[in-house]
Image 1: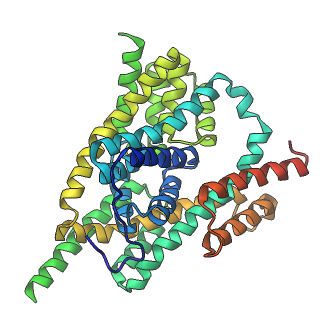
Image 2: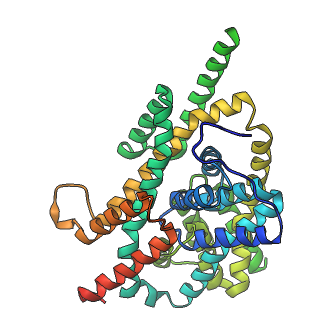
Length: 201
Length: 190
């Protein structure tokens, strides 16, 4: 299980009532502050679960993102289910899902009762004015944290893959699902070639 | 058919067929709630999207709550949300099981290693879009440039990268909200 090339080592916590409460509280607070799409929660999740709690490592997190993104349903919910299962099987997945779903349920229930007032509320608009650039900073900082180990390995293929994916996503606005499918196909072929080469040695 | 079952089934379909996040779910939500069932008018749907973007949480779950509440109160919220998350719960638990079993296997390990850069590219793209949304525009037209947002962004970025100041992202968001309100008060917006 140990992966020596990683800067952060993960350790599965002991599963008990205290852990479930911690898992619920962690996913609840993450979900409470996630606006602006699934990748924001991924960034917050990394800060909290990889850096602070050390429940998972960066590679596991990226794998979870790949799987969450390519499956039906909200990325945030899928990511929570993956982490929850990884830490404590089905009960863990369900606790994490509950923590993720409750904040939007509570907030939207309240908002839908008086949404005209919320829509035009200048206090809320001002708060968002201050939070939006912070969200951008969080997501870009996480990008850098994930990018650095990739660059350090000095392997050309992953970096080329990253650049191509970025150009397709950002400049050509290609659908992310399509980019992922193409990359998975490319990755399968590359991996088969690599394994075959190693087999010949 | 009871309204609760109808909500459950409609949002189950939205959950099952929306692959690729919030923006993929939007047309499905519109098809189910506006066109097929007539639970929302088009104007209400537009409001829903605005609210969903302003509030935390996935767009699909926000919509399930909003529509459920409007159509059938708290019971409707629970029925629609449960329907919406059930496909994810089932599918992800199966995939998580497979991942735990096979992720250390050479072929899958190697495939995942080669796909991971795409995640970094996707997160970077999302970050740039959020930055653009926050500060106005990258184009040279200065009229949309939001200096306040640029300063907040730079400060937040420096704080996040600082090894000395260990400020968590949630605390930083709360500070951001407070600064935004403060700025609103000072400039007379509020």
